[in-house]
Length: 356
Ligand code: SAM
Ligand code: MD0
Ligand code: SF4
Image 1 (cartoon, protein in one colour):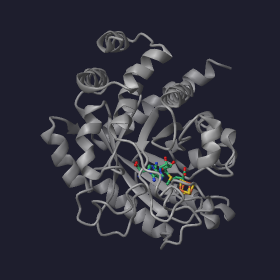
Image 2 (tube, rainbow, N blue to C red; image 1 turned 120 degrees about the vertical axis):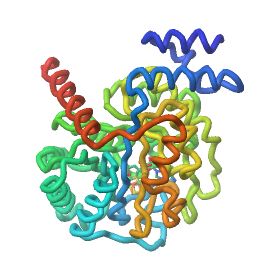
Image 3 (cartoon, helix red, strand yellow; image 1 turned 90 degrees about the vertical axis):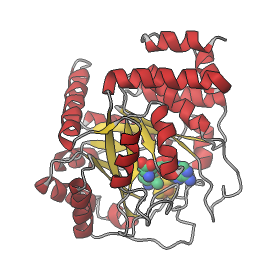
């Protein structure tokens, strides 16, 4: 199959068949560069040189779940922490002051916050919103339907809940005991409440190429404004610690394919898989924002790389901006990011109104 024929038509906005997408996802050698170049062309047409920056704050690492891939699963005996509301608000302000455009408030499914009906998180969003207009992402895991209205009212802009895979059997093996449809619906409920949503896939958790095609199609069919791919990083003390993983080029190809399939979607270049060393290749695969920027010396953890590049400050915003500018790209301002979010939210509300 001729790869450039497929990418050329996708750059023009035409669709591709499952077989063609599978061919892109398994491309080798020079063909890969053709795919990444096409993804960059589309990304630059939509976003120009602007790159959005997202600060990551894993504010509670307690979790009731036992996802087999996750370091923070409840059965893993590790040190955990839970930041107080005051600390979280203070750290969010620090992130905003550093010129980061988005703050991602992430938690494990922490029984303490759940028993309090997520009021702790609502209060945090409220408190940040009182002093700052910075776009806020919440990543609370799977939450009850009624919670979304409260997040939206407090001022959250986007909800991240990753399905990991749309292969139901594989999902059941990885996200043990968690309802597939309830998790899928999180994205729909977030958008119904007027917030944006992010879906995500993991690469290297035992899926086939056909599963990847199907997962990408399902994620894009939900019409979220943001979607990601992350390579599985094996975690000590978990059932998958020795399962091995795949090369990160598979993640890059998934990102590029998503970019070609939906030109204006936000796709993160995460620093959480290969640290800062992996930033350039992800931007070169068509990413439009950098996520998992973490302030040093605040005892904050990452997820897939719980400590890589954090304490020495290489995952900090200053370092990230230097690397970005080296690539001829520029960080977005927080005002630009706010306008982009508001515009996307307006579009979302309009498209949902026209369905009713
Ligand atoms: N607890 C919430 C949840 O599960 O939705 C939010 C945080 S969770 C730690 C965020 C995401 O990190 C997961 O959905 C998964 O995609 C990713 N992740 C977790 N462990 C990982 C690993 N070992 N390798 C790569 N990604 C991982
Ligand atoms: C990241 N470590 O962006 C974060 C996390 C949760 N919304 C995101 C997986 O890679
Ligand atoms: Fe908990 Fe999220 Fe980790 Fe699953 S991925 S164990 S829900 S923190």
